[in-house]
Length: 87
Image (cartoon, rainbow, N blue to C red; front, top):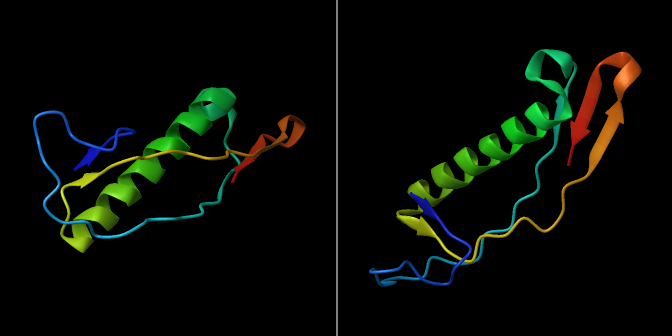
């Protein structure tokens, strides 16, 4: 499954439009240090979001998600408690 910020796939064509996808995710972690700090937690969060999007597109019968954007990422950090929340 292709994820692209473009409105087209270079060398391909859109055969069928399956609709707009709008999702909201929340992820909390109490093992920030074990994941390599804030960067590791945010990276893992975005990878999980992309995996869920790919599964959703696949379930709809598609093979690409075009015009993909992340509009907002909110981080709630509590370093003394080894916690972080991503929204």
